Image (tube, rainbow, N blue to C red):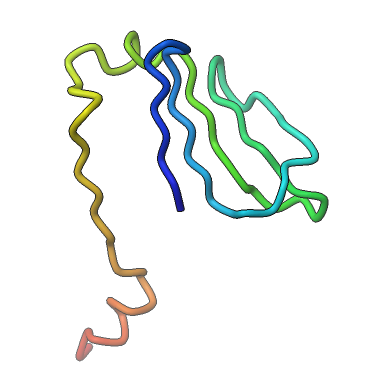
Length: 78
């Protein structure tokens, strides 16, 4: 997974797979999903980043991995 911020384009791109995109769909204004030939999401683009997160420091990000609900349920003694 790769996160790229292009300050000149005012956009963020999250690469989820190394497979090439063969189709794209704007799912909301300025939010574009890229799909591979099998219809799997390979990337997400967010345009107009400075308007969406005006106070964000684009040079500093915090990435957090959250355990899946399945893993959390397995630990639950109920």
